[in-house]
Amino acid sequence: MYAIVEIAGQQFKVAKDQKVFVHRLAGEEGDNVSFDKVLLAADGDNITLGAPAIDGAQVGAKIRRHLKGDKVIVFKKKRRKGYRVKNGHRQSLTEIVIESIVTSGAKKSAPKAATKKAEPKVEKEAKAPAPKAETKAAPKKEAAKTKATTEDLSTKTVAELKELAKAQGISGISSMKKAELIEALQGK
Image (cartoon, rainbow, N blue to C red; front, top):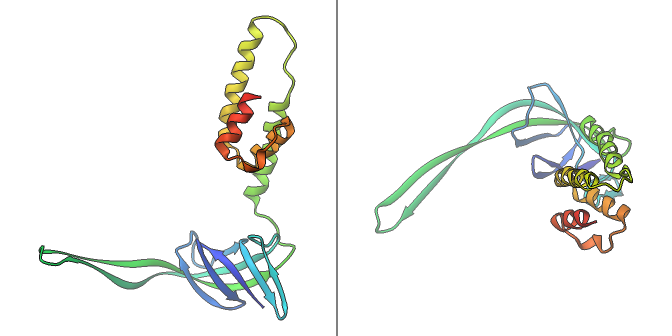
């Protein structure tokens, strides 16, 4: 069984008990890490392809050590100008050992679940009906609420903005960008 997983911005083909050198990861030696951006998983003739990642798939690994890569010499020269610059670079790396590849049933990480719980509260506040008082003070309160919602709108993702626009009955949201969605929601 093998999988193609994205680790620190790079894609690796990994199998169980394989050693992989990746860009420096946060964590101490001996810590367990998991990666849920599994792009492809294969078990014999069974191949599961994600779009872009497989839901519920996870690759577990253990950090063995932190090290530096080989020295790379960067030499710049411009002929007939007397310009020569020599620099060196050593990439910081982490050696990990792949311990497990799970294709389904992996638990989601805690921070994602915490953000999902916080989002419905904000939506409920935004959808709360305003009092029906016809005084001059009421428009000022509504203007203050719209300012608060514009600040909230800039922190939301495009998917959340599309859901809000769909709930308010705005059409043509599939081709809108984030800025256009915010403008449309402010106009309603």
